[in-house]
Length: 302
Image (cartoon, rainbow, N blue to C red; front, side):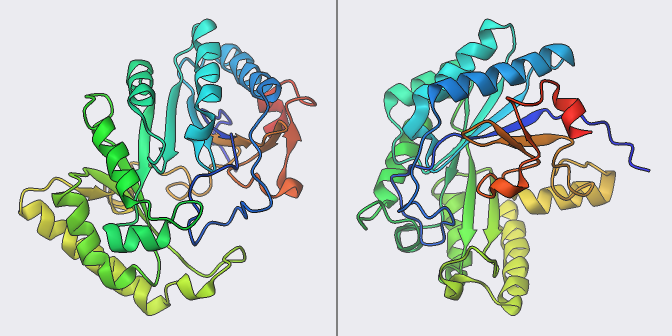
């Protein structure tokens, strides 16, 4: 029988669908949808989580505002943080950003509030500019580097993580990309997402073949060993989590270490307050309820 206690502590918000980039593999179809959550619904969702945390004695819920580009709605994130702190909670807010909108003011605010920033970087300029152009088709690499340079000045932000997407275009450059991460960006931890065939891919040519997936994994492990032997303390999150799970049952991956923990350790909210087991908020039929219909979250999930 299933014995894992139902106590979500990781909450995803579909904060905004607006974005200043137009990544070639994006599945959100931003040309037809670019809405940002209303202040009314944001407050309602946040207060729903606050009541849940107070009832079940959760002091520091993990919050991830999702996009689009979350920094477009940075004011909403600050409002959310203020509401949690007003009720004596200390949220752990993490933002995955393309770094193109980072300013000194945003960096100062994030550092002061201990808001964690992760940067989406697909590689050196050749790969990054091709896969992650700005709205209008312009190169984005320099904007990203400028954002990284700003946050690197703050002790609370400088050890940022990286999420990188590997497509068939970037695959021949994988060794160079890993070298760039370690030796130029001084990345300590990153996550490599390999593009596979899926129903929402608009360009199937970007997907890696099975042979490329196998070779990419071999290149990744070999390069990580080489870089560490050269003195660069860099790790890839998927490799790290799988090793820890195998060796000591670390169980740090909420999706794969113990099977899916959606609806058990994590949930997501769309902009209308619907509740989902994970970040599938683009599929309304997958909603399991709403903050406006179910007062007790655990009762709903059970």
